[in-house]
Length: 166
Image 1 (cartoon, rainbow, N blue to C red):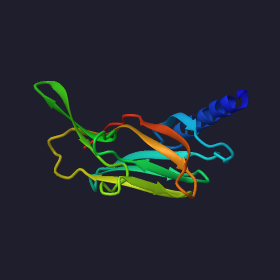
Image 2: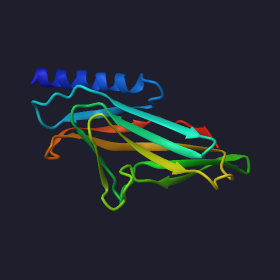
Image 3: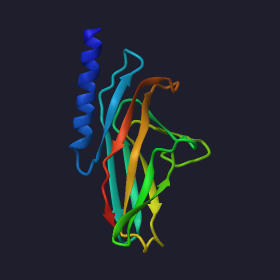
């Protein structure tokens, strides 16, 4: 039992360090819970947020550097990932939040990211000239799964709020 707890702590710390210390990575897996023993969970999850002023595209890039598939969920009833748009009204900062699908496909509500693959979510910000800044915001669940899509481990990915000027 002590070995399992120690393994989970070490895995959580290594995942946190690896996802927050690379390039523009702005997130970390929190509360990683191992569901099945006996799997090699070495690897990292690289998450980057960026905004291209020329094309007016806000982009979230999720790269799977684990040896197993990652499964992302989207719930219509409890969306957790948002695009936040910031503006000033009467001298006070206001925020509009738009729920978005982390899967990229609202019909399927899930997305599998294979090892050494990247999932990109792009948001077109053209026509948002009223707003001053934009960002991704919120947590979402990521599960490491085996070839039968059985959960090996699950954790929550928390995006740090990074504002981009429009």
